[in-house]
Every structure is written in C-alpha cells, then in structure tokens.
Image (cartoon, rainbow, N blue to C red; front, side, top):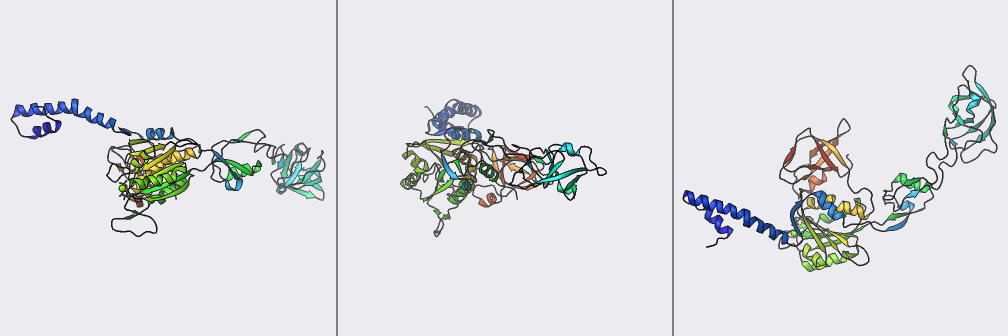
Length: 462
Ligand code: AMP
Ligand code: MG
C-alpha cells in the first residue's frame, strides 16, 4: 500500500523492532529528499507573485529601482527653490568677480613702487585718487601714486596690489609704505569665483542656501526643478482609529500614517492622505483608486497571508503587477512592491508595507525612500552610513541581517559610539523614537563592545 509522507512519519515514530525501525527511517529520509522537498519547492515556485528564495536588501532595491524613473520638471521662483532638486545643469554666464577688486580697506598701488621699502626708508607715494565699492576710478594710477580703496572697490588700471590701511601711515597727501608689496597682494582677481562658460551646478543637485546664492548671482530669478513626488498614504486595519476618533474595544490609534507622512516629507515628497481603510477588499481598493493620481502609493498593514489581509487582492483588482519578496532583513516581513499600469505616464509604484509601526518605518527607509528620491531626481538615493563603535554588545539573534535601532553619541575622537535603544521588536515605536540610526548586523552574530559597526544615519546626532 503506498504511503503518504505523513503516514511514513507516523509509522517512523512508532516504536518497532530494530531492523524495521531503521528501514522506516531510511525510507522516510529518502522520501523527504526525493519527493517531499522537490514537491514543496515546486508548489512554492508556482505560488503567484511569491519568490520563495530569500533575497538581499540590495537585490530587492535593485528590482524596485529598475521600475522607478524620475519625474518631470516645473519652474519655481528662486525663493521657493530651497530643498528642491535642480532639473538641469547650470553654467556661469559671467566672470565673477567681474573685475579685480580689493579684499581690504587700504591703498591700491604698484608693487614696483615699494621695492626695498622698510621702516627706515619707507616708499613715499602720492595719494591721488579714491575708490569706494560700487564706484570705478576716473583715471589710471601712474608710477609713484596710490589710490585710497575700500573692500570690493575695483582696482584702478595701473595698480597691481593693495596694502591694508593698518599697515601704512600718511603725511597729508603722502602715503608712507614701510615694507615691500608683492603684485597681487590683497587683490581678488577677475573670475576668481567662476568664469563665464564654466559648469557650476550639476543636474540632480539638492538646492541649499549656497546654491540659492550662486543661482541669484547668475541671474536665475526662476529655477527649473524636478517636480515633488506626490505620495498617497493609506493605513488599513479594522482595529485602526484615526486622530480624533474614540478607541473602542480592541482598537488602537493610527500611528503609521503620521510616521510615514514625516518620512515622505523628509525624503522630499508631498504626502497625500488616503485615510484609514477597514479590512475590506472594496474599501481598500476604493482608497487606492483615490490615490491613482499620485506618483507613488504606500499602504501599511493587511499585506500578510491572514484571512483579513486584502491589500494584495485590492492591488490585483487594480491590475497591478505585483512583486513580493522575502527579504533578508529584520525587522521585516515579506515586502510587497507593485506597479499599476496607467495611461499617460509611467506605471505607478505601490509599496504595501507591513503594519507594525517599526517594520513600516524601517521598510520605508530601506526601500521606499530610495525610490522616492529617484522619482524626485536626487543624485543621492541613500542615507549616509557611518562607522560607529559599539558601546555595549549588539546581538542579532536569528539568521536575518539586522537593521537594529541604535542611539549614537559623538565620542572624544570625533567618531560615533552606538548603543541599542532598547527592545527591538517591531511594535516598539519608542525605541525608534530614541534611534539616531540603524546598525546593520549580519545574521546570527553579535557585535562585541568596542567593535565597529556600520550605522545608517537617520538624523543628525544631537
Ligand atoms: P498587519 O500587518 O495587518 O498584520 O498588522 C501588524 C500590526 O501592526 C498589528 O498589530 C496592527 O494592529 C499594527 N498596525 C497596523 N496598522 C497600524 C497603524 N496604522 N498604526 C499603528 N499600528 C498599526
Ligand atoms: Mg491587520
């Protein structure tokens, strides 16, 4: 009589006479190797949208970024451009400064006229002109002359240097210079900052205060920047009560919408609230539909394989191509990424994040943020990673790579010290609040106190 693998196991478990038991065990093992394992593997491989193989964070990210492009541009007034991403390279249209000018209040002169000058035998020059910033000399400087000049004043023709006023004395209209002066001293040459035609800002650069100054100097009252990605944020779950609602029995407050909103803004996106949907297929689908005009969608919770998990089914109804990967990370569940084909623009990327508050935030950091930065045209997609010294042991039990919450302190040598912020389970938002970064630790390993560990910086260390 043929036996199923279950029957074989039961049979093997029964106490038997020596020979028979060995035979059974061997049969059982052989069945496992040749029949059961291949069958299970085959079944998993056939499961739609599910890749049974655990992939690395890097590979998941690669697969995501392969499906995300950069948005188009828009024009904004310069004063609104801070924090935006430059959509085109900028070249200088002028020499800056446009002419050689003085970097000090003092006197413009010809170095040759002070050759060999000393306290004992100062050079005596005729003060023959005066140039304030914003004015030009009405005549050239000739041999034996000095012009009074102020910081930013254009150097008169004929002069090649400036001596600061603190270093000279005057007798009426005569200047006494008691040291030699080199040509070029205290002169800012023409084009010292930038030259016409020189490329000064590259496409994809984040516009900060210095960039604003540079753009203004080049006359850009308006700037073409990459459009800000609009990001729909949906929370799901029967138990989730949004701000303003009263918690009933079995219910918990919605926190994911708000932490994700913050993360979206920090990553340069514009959050679009899609509310809280209960665990019902049509409701989730309807909320996703609201968000179809966005550039990216994020949902949290309802994406496991429980009977109340409808996010994947809702995405299916919207015709999404779904990718679900088991990623080698902790905290983490399978991460679901989908693209909804849409007319007019590229496919709409959707991230169905896990519901646990820290899992949602960490998966956002690792996967959504780089995608969002790519949409927004940022040259740099990743957070900075620093090396920190473990101030106490940082254990990562379990075989997955850990992204563990750590607080950082600046140590005396200018480096960082790292310490776990407490309980690392995925529902503990407070240990995320205390975290400056995520320490990246291989599976089944412990970083001993004193050892170095790479930490993804989530914020400035205070
Ligand atoms: P799920 O992924 O639906 O199994 O949810 C995992 C856990 O995350 C559950 O304990 C949920 O109650 C919790 N959770 C889901 N959504 C939210 C949310 N928006 N805010 C806070 N906790 C949530
Ligand atoms: Mg749920």
